[in-house]
Length: 152
Image 1: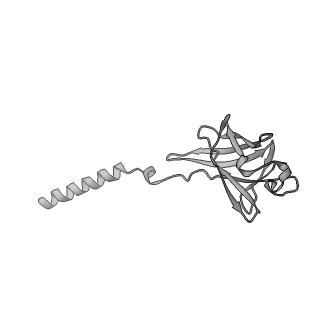
Image 2: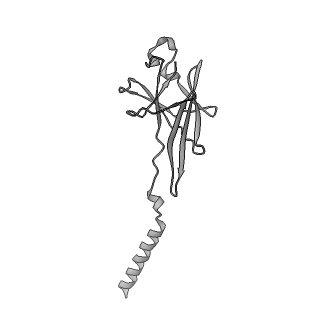
Image 3: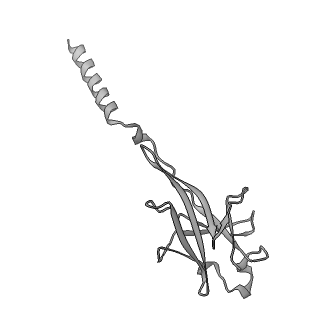
């Protein structure tokens, strides 16, 4: 009799713990990937190496909805011999964002980023669908995934 009560008790505990654990509790969406880009001048060279351009990496800023957008990270990639900028532009209530890329006090460009929002049962997934720089559609470079932005 005591064995039956013990088995019933453990069966009840197992049943309750299984009911409390939903499939979504163990599933997590990957965070949106960053948008990575680098800047070039008209000749395809790094504009920061040109003293006449009046640009410095520290002066580059992003503005989103009229406010500075501080999610801009940098690093160097030797594959493209340039400074890479990364940002996380996903706005969780929109499917398209317009970011102003302020290069210096006299030069501001527009970077439009579209993405699809797939709302699933457990989480929402964001996938980039299009990029536009000053109205011109851009494609990511196949070998690096970077966007090349011609600024001068």
